[in-house]
Length: 292
Image (cartoon, rainbow, N blue to C red):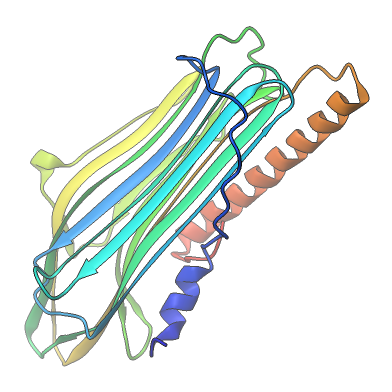
């Protein structure tokens, strides 16, 4: 049982039960819809060690078909090593693709690390090196419909690093990347922001994005260092997390009662996901790690 459960409780609000759905059929080489979301983060050379660490991972995939073909995959890994080389790393990956008429697929993944009580003496520096990348991609191929209400590919990603004063729970510094792609649709966003105590290696840090049409993407590759000196004895808690989520669907022609019911179900689920994403954007601005 961890002493500082308030940090883990906030982090775990992002988690979802691990469920793996069956795959209905093997996909052809080119999918009609495709959605991809991935994020990785590596930390090395901590100037001091935490008194305790915690790692968290979770995945969820769903695949439903009434005639089309769909797959959904997710993976999450996290490590915090303070014995051998004083380092930490994690990754979160989600992907879904489908083809045909009448399917829905989604994948969610979450990974994170928590380092409790890094001790920093008065007038001493707390620092570490980091690197990572963030990528979202959505595509719709071989479509003659071009209608966001009958065919869609969506990708969402949130990366967040936050450093707290362990005693007061005050947020001291943060680094966040947020992105959302909606194809076909116009709900596309991408943000990259960091506090002043984070320095990036500009020769190895890039961001790029393309919105519009049937193929969209957003990406960031980064490398840098965190460094801050404290004017009193301070205990720090580091919370780093990432969530990656994707969905694809097509709605069949509602020529039967079953088709009509499936259409309503898929459209309703999509509207719910969009409302949840809108809420997550607001939470991102407020630096909150509650669930999307």
